Length: 325
Image (tube, rainbow, N blue to C red; front, top):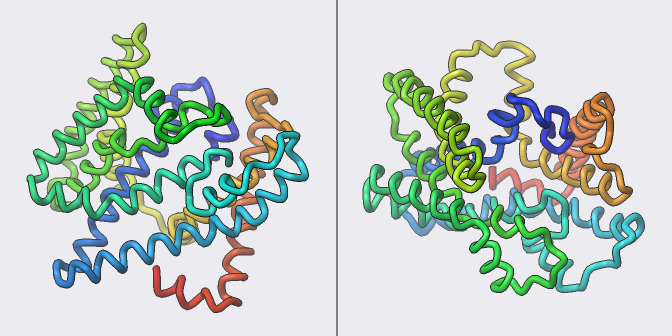
């Protein structure tokens, strides 16, 4: 939400921490997803796979459908652009939503949910170190050939010229293999080794940031280095959070944000998209207005989550969603 409000744009905190939120989240996605599979055990692999796909798609897609039921009429009423084709409307309900502001993240997560069981199986088959190496190389190659990938994706997905070009790279799964394989690897690190891992990560992070500064005249190389630095940054932040004593209201607030993180994201996506429809752009506003917009995103997302939870409890879908938790 700080990213979309552009409240800290141009600061070191924004560049090194805030704007790295999605890559850090993907490391956590690899970690928590791997732990989920470990907790299920290795018995009945087909049944576990079915539970994984069904539960994740239900939890992810149903809130998206609820938002789209509101978003499409809003676009028709508020946006000067003509309504998209019926194919575009149906595509968004299936998770492919380049026309919805920040909807690329929805497409990416659905894609990774489907791919994760295969990625995890491959990493276990070849070994964690080989998996990390392949993930590292896949991310480097993806970022180095970013514009070639965009051009290929535009042709493959039959772009009609209406989609922002970087959308194609943002949903390109191989670019995030380093994050996912690192998350899978972190799930195997014993508790007594986590401090050592954090120290090693801190050294790697400093070296990578220094390397990025060195290659500043070459933006593509700098982007590659930033992508590699996201993993050690995630390890550092995990260790820091483990040392923070969160009690009382803070502990409950953080737990609530974690539990409803998807709803919060979807909620702010609707608000942010609506703001763009009415030509309200944070980048053109003074800094105080950007922070006000940030608060609007937070409060609006929380309200929408509460509304969604209330509706969920009053519908037959509640049992399905509870079973998918």
